[in-house]
Length: 111
Image (cartoon, rainbow, N blue to C red; front, side):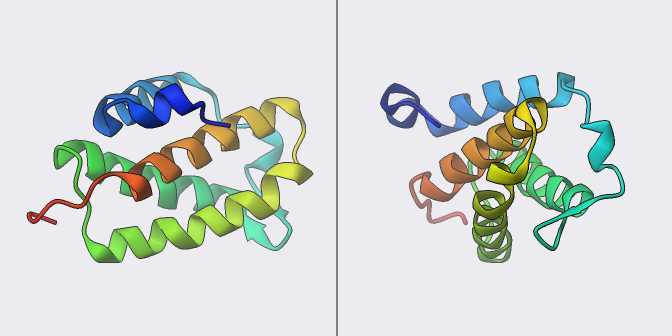
């Protein structure tokens, strides 16, 4: 889980750091064509990655549609992570951490 210090830090910087680690991590091979708890793991990864990438490229802002996608992904991540093996759980926990940071980032009028 995200520590209190990470939550207090600049959300953009915290997400950027997690994103860098995420882009260096290999996708869990077993999950390439797997559904867990009724969730396509590839699609879940892709949805979060697209929203996080947009957040970073827009300097810490996402539109309401992407925020809605992330909110749905957060619920799916909370459902699937307990079902995953250690390395898989680490990979998807990082997605959850980024999701939470993006959703909790302060609103900006340019969103």
